[in-house]
Length: 290
Image (tube, rainbow, N blue to C red; front, side):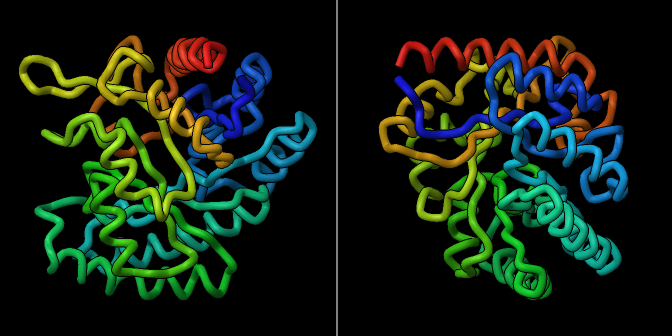
C-alpha cells in the first residue's frame, strides 16, 4: 500500500559527507533528511557558505529538510552561562530552519538529575519563558523530544510538560527507541505513543533492547523492543502524513554513552551508512508488505 507519511534519515546517521547522504536518499527514494551534524559541524555552527551548499544540493535533488536536530537545552538547569549559550543555539537553529525551509527545530528539557516532579516541571517552565519569546519573535517552531538523559524521558513526561506550557509553537517529537531505553519503561507503543499524541508534530524511530544484565543496546530496526513495525502500521492506518526520521544509533561497533547523548561528528557517523541501510532495508520490507 502507499503510505501517507514521509520518511527521512538523520544526516549524520549516514555520513558527514553530503554526497553519501544524498546517495542513500536516492537509493531508498527518501524525500528528505533530518539535519544534525554535517561536514563535522553541528547544525547551529554551520557557516553561511555551508548552508548555501546544503540548500543548493538538496534543492537540486528535490530533497527536503524535515527538522533541524539541534541540541537546544541539553545543558545543566543550574548553569546561567550554559542556558544563555543555548538561547543563542536556538536562535541560530531557527535561522537555519528558515534558510532550509525546515518546519521545526528539535529541543529538550535540560539534563536529567532526578525525578520529573512538580518542582522540576515548574523550574523547566520558568526557563522556557525566554525560548518562547525567541520563537515568537523569529517565527519558529520547536519540538520537544523525549530522551532519558533529559528531564522528559518519555512521551508521557513530554506531554505533561506541554500541557503545562500550553504554547502553540511548541509540540512533541516522539522517539520510540528513546522510550524503551528508559529503565523499566516498557515498549512505548501504544501507551506512551498515545500519551503524547495530542502534541505530536514529528517522529523519530530507532530500536533497542536490554540485555540480561539490564544494559541497553541500540539494534537494527526489528531486532529490539520498540515495536517499530507495529507503529508504522498504525500510523499508516491512521493516515499520519507527517515525517518519520530514522535515527539509527545502532552500529556494528556500539556507540559510547557520550556519543549517544551528544551525537555528531565523524566518529559518531563511522559505519553509519552500513547500519542505516540495514535499517532502511528492514523498513522497506515492512512497508512493501502492508
